[in-house]
Amino acid sequence: MAMGYSKEVMDHFTNPRNVGEIENPDGMGEVGNAKCGDIMRIYLRIVEDVIEDVKFMTFGCASAIATSSIATELIKGKKVEDALSLTNKAVVEALSDLPASKIHCSVLAEQAIKAAVKDYYDKNSIAYDAEIFTLLNEEHSH
Ligand code: FES
Image 1 (spheres, rainbow, N blue to C red):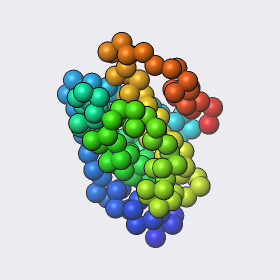
Image 2: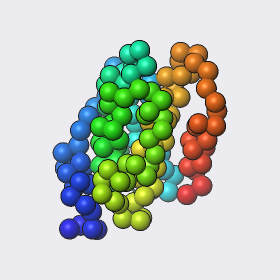
Image 3: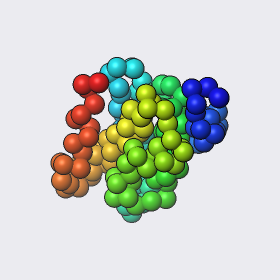
Image 4: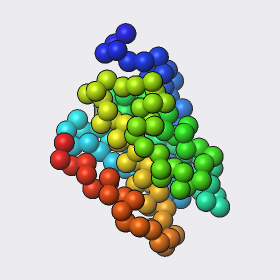
């Protein structure tokens, strides 16, 4: 199998879930990795603090597509704060592992969700602890 990808990665890459955009989203996050140049966008529809819908657009590698796809599945129907606690580790586990050189792709998925939630909080003047979003400032170095 190409680069030793798990069957979950291949499944989500060849048949990604929740691809697309949401018009007038309640939150939108766009993040990128400066090294590989991949870009990931997450759109959220939030009703009464629950993620009613989520879509993604990813311009990137197979793992970036697979991680964004599974990440949307993991947060759909969940409360906003549960989406915030989704870690890239949980994404990797849900995909039955990623090659070491592809772990940063899962970090992108965690960052994109956090960026979308931050956008939702900012738009609605919801107060938050800035520390929750420190990961968003750590990307540019590698
Ligand atoms: Fe960079 Fe996958 S190679 S996101």
